[in-house]
Each structure stands twice: as C-alpha cells, then as structure tokens.
Image (cartoon, rainbow, N blue to C red; front, side):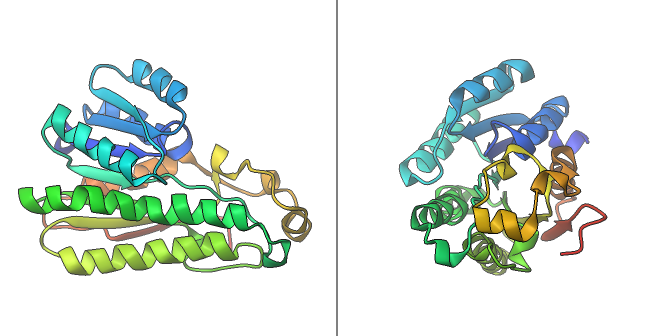
Length: 243
C-alpha cells in the first residue's frame, strides 16, 4: 500500500489491543506514526520496537489539554496530521440499578468527550490544509443496546451520531469513518463485569471474538481508499456473533 508511505497518522488508545496492532501494520507500510495512550511505558516499548518513524506521547483523552497538546506536537514534528484515529475507550458494564455513576462518568469522559476533543483539536488544521481523515471507534453497541450496556451503548450511539454529522458537515473536504467492531480479543474487555452482568451473560472469555488485527485491517482499508472514495461506516463481527 504505497499510498500510506509517509502518511502522518495519530492513534489514541495505542498502547495495546487494536491500536497497537494497527501501529505494527502501519509501521511496516512506512507510515509516520504518533501513538497516544495513558500508559507511557507500554507506548515507549512499542515505539522502540517499531523504529524511527514512530513518536509517542502520554495522553489522557478525557483531558482536552492533553489532546490539544498531542495534535500540536504532531504538527510541530511532522508538519501535518493526515489521519486521526479516535480509538481510546473503556467498557465497564453494569445495570442502571447498580448505580455505578463513577464508571458512567468515566465512559462519557473517554468514549465520548475524547472523540469530541480529538475532532476539535484536528479539524481546523485539516480544513485549512484542505484534506484529512478522522476515524472513530464505535461498537456494534452503537447500533444495538442490551440490558447492562446502557451507558456504554449510549456513548457508542453518540459517537455514531457525532461522526455522521461530521461527515455531513465536511463532505468533499475531509474524510470521516466510523468503525463498529463486535467482541474483540483485547484488554478492553478485561474489566471484571458487575455481578449482574456476569449473571446475565456468563463468562465473556468463552464468547467468539475478533482478533485485534482484524479491526486494524479495517482501519487500514478505510484510510487506503483513493481520494474520491470514502469508506464511512465499517461493521465487523465474529462470524458467530448474532447481535
């Protein structure tokens, strides 16, 4: 994919899972990468593995100042941002009557505000240079909610609405893609579910899952399309998953 050589790509949630899988694939394609996450030691290790075209910056996407600094430093180092992937997210599931307000707020801050902060930080730059691509990770739960997933699904429905509106507002100026993965084998789902969720769904470890690399491939597919082609929405699930 020669079209990705030297493309400047910023990935949040890059310390493990989908983000790290994408970084490895993109480094092999000679993209210039900026990797962001809260766990800077894991970022440091990954960046050392991937070589000189990779920069990392500790970033909490729930903090607007962190996201602004991430984009500013990328532009300072590389001169531009070609792609921003708002990929960071958390998924502590619970039922509403469990009252886990702190977890609800954390999901809103990271899954939802983090996407908005990313858009706000990079959009003026992309519009000024007349090109760019903003990608966000939603979920199949952005299309279908289930008991015990109300707040998580709410954030992912919101990401879907935000990204579709962004697409409409910027059509013909920049590209916009939303990726909707089903269950995926990453640390993302390792948080212990609440007792009610565990009773309702059983052991999530036993469910069929996508490999993180499959979602990374979907991202690479989207950003590799010709200039006049936009892959706006990509849903992918394990073949056995019904919801």
